[in-house]
Image (cartoon, rainbow, N blue to C red; front, top):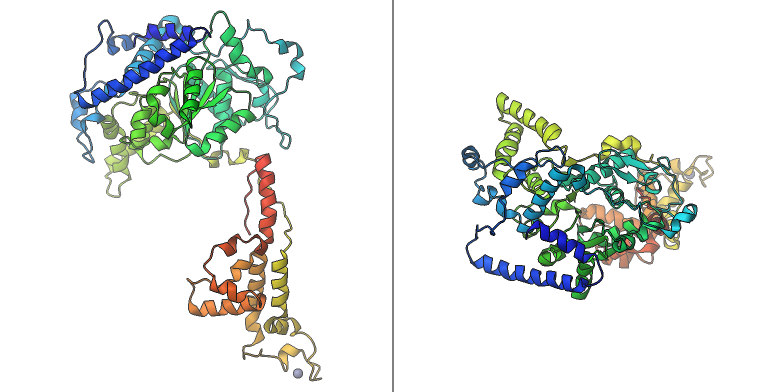
Length: 584
Ligand SMILES: [Zn+2]
């Protein structure tokens, strides 16, 4: 597909008239592509180039300006081929084959980007759209516009000021900027730069550092949104604009369990036109048509849905693709990884909170998705990165091997990765995180617990302990426990039972089910536990003991006052987005 056609159809799509025809045409194309793929699967791969289509190398080499410069994939050489035989013997031919992994439409877009950026300099970049000539009726009442996010229970951590990102000319508007920590601004700027230059990147921050809000901040800048209710109208305004300016369309791919989270976070942090590409085929087609015709800003789908519908989804020239939990595509041979490699987007941003430092080949697979071809072939990566690092970690490593490993690690971390990977660890920003605050919450015992507590206190052994300090009834003016009541009825000294009794009280105050003997304990232990259970629950112990392995006892809210309180706290925390940590 020649790139000029991309542009022609893109302009055509943005009008309402004839929109259905265009979409229809694209849907037909998808079917043809599917048919073609089916044929291809049975035939030998063809290397035939369409007449008039320029070779990739010729054009890519021309992009020699600093702007949007793309590092060239290392040439296949005799040495690399040789080295590819190292290691785990999995160096099949496809480790060297990168050209074929890129679909034609992406090669065309890449060529187009490179030539455009080379020819037009900064004008070829995907800079945020400008609304200078767009009238918003709300502009008259700016002070009254509502803003998002709208948090009422927490204090902003930064001044209410727009943040201008120097390297990408994007702006994080004040309503959002006031809630971002410095590292989050840095992360948003990192991603926005990749969006503007249409490159791929990986945000590998630890869990809990707010990757989602960093993405939303970057997207807000990419769409030139201002964090107020005008943002709801931007897409429509731009569609009506006579110049048909560029307006981004975004695809978010995530595990199914995170779809609604993305949706609600987008809503919390702004006004977005979002559609799910998911569910019934009618729903999917509606989302696809919207994306093809510029009637949606963000489409959310899952990895599985993408895998099953990739030829349709790749009809859209996505400006930005976000792959959440992208470690799901770390396995080079998995179907989903191969499908993701076909994604029709030059700006692919991966998010992962899972450490990938020590699995270098997996890192290659993810980076080869974010930036196809940029990291060379897997065999070259293995030879130059994985092998020296792995060898250096071995116990038998020689001094030169250790040295090579150190140099390789340093080059990787300080030279090769930084333009593509941003990873911050929780520990590094511990001082920036909210201080841990302890709040004591009193949790009354449930009536079942109160009854058990009273019964246990009334048991003979506990009674003996409690009254040990009373004057003895023999009249010798001595304390009972050291006179006629040194032993309880079973012959034990009462002192032996002080600590166990305290433990029992503590257990039943935490959760009544903790008193139930556990069948994995020794028979001896079980016997002792059973005695205490009997003292605490004279009416219930038989039932409890007979069903002692049933999880239901632990789920019984009447056995645990803390649970009742915790439930309320969780509801509260869920609404206010605090995360509770709790220990007994
Ligand atoms: Zn006595």
